[in-house]
Image (cartoon, rainbow, N blue to C red; front, side, top):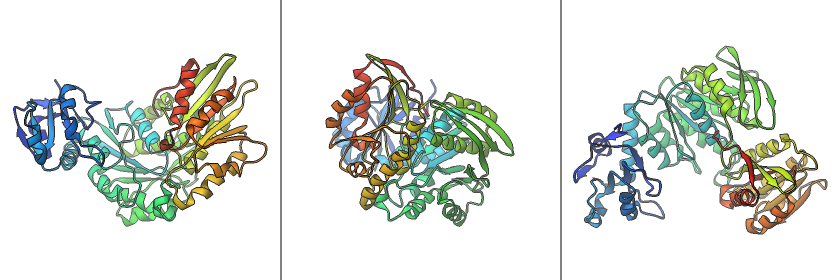
Length: 477
């Protein structure tokens, strides 16, 4: 059996003490008893709302090979016979394990942050680099104070590439995480008005994202979006952090990795990019101009870590959008098919505009309409009213036929929509749901977008369960 960690190595990594008869090793690491697989170690992390120690029995039933528990909880674990590693603090032990994993690997490490496109870029890197080596990457959006060390701790010693997503809501959150990851390449996808409620302006967001430069390995690179209006600020901060190599990607003529040509289609894009002094043609399997930008970052990062760029470019043709991030469903109304574009995972002004552009570029059939189903963008603070209202102008510049809205913040947008666009507003998702079901007709293209906390994924689920699925693009980006 191949172990992720031998028990001796895990004890040494955590700095804990073994309790009971240790197994030879563990096959993985989990902090969730519901998804734990037999043979894994269960780290009983105490969170804000739940304490992993309360789920130790469930972890054992799921097949945990050993438990990592805190010293203070050990008396309550007295009746359990599963071996344990006892530590002072379980989250600290996970961080130590992550540091040990980083120290033992020879993998090329890439970290991704930004206001939009983090997860899609990370998944595109995972997918494309898998064509040239063994890749380890963050699961889902594991990009916070427990997700990053967990991803590190799960990193196999023999992987060739490792991809980490690093997120933040407030200043100071990226710095400690990137110093654990120590990437060879750090990508900032875009600076935009995400979490603007916690910042005064976009410059402050850029400065918080720039914390990622502080962990870059000596001789490593900061890969920046040359089309971003905050590029100069980021470039200066990279230099101030001691990063000498700050190449760029984008359509700008001075980009290091330059987009020369892009043809956007409903379900894919064709691009030509100049990478490392040669022109590379690629088919991008997932649609959207924002996905093209992500793919350009992937090609640039592949070049910087020494991967075979032409092979990586060919692999990009296999990209498809994932749930909540552009996944398409072709559903069957009794009178004919219609299309649903699921963008329900998250939203900020930049990603909202990208999703509206994607809707605009998707052809309808017959008497079909382009329908944008939009919900609140969260964490915009005092800027919320202005930014939601501005979406009305943006939608008005497209071929959108109808806008359906729900949520307290998005309501102001309805006051700023042109007369040519029919609009419907309901206060809640549950109130909008029956209206959406009644509105759908054959040939429509329906794009559903909001911040995750608004619950618009329920609208997607309702449509999928109410109409037979004809086909579904369900792979990852």
